[in-house]
Image 1 (tube, one colour):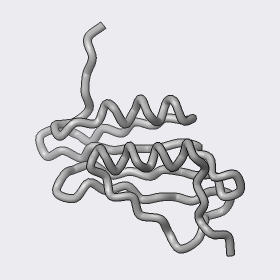
Image 2 (tube, helix red, strand yellow; image 1 turned 30 degrees about the vertical axis):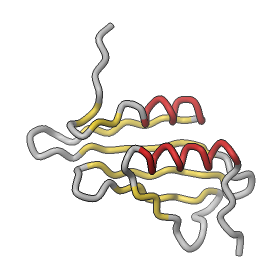
Image 3 (cartoon, rainbow, N blue to C red; image 1 turned 180 degrees about the horizontal axis):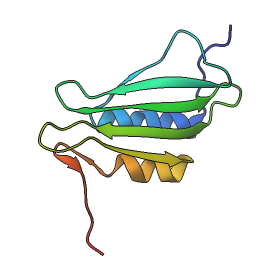
Image 4 (cartoon, one colour; image 1 turned 180 degrees about the vertical axis):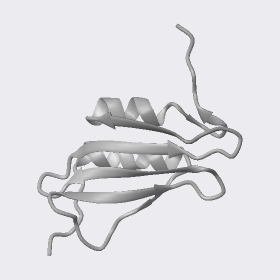
Length: 101
């Protein structure tokens, strides 16, 4: 069995998720070619999945969902380390941060 070994960038992304309040749960085994890390923010309507390459330990993509009671669920996805970091920065306690153009 392959042990979970994220590369430096994936480790930093996991750290950013934990700093944003997410609990990152590593499964016991990979699913196909990637590890599917479950993201949860206890006491909030946030949840998601971070996909990390089984072979090279790269952060591949993330899917994060806000399931608020006052509005319909909103899901956002990002691929690649830079896009994943940018998406994490949009998470607020009240839903997705909306930036004015």
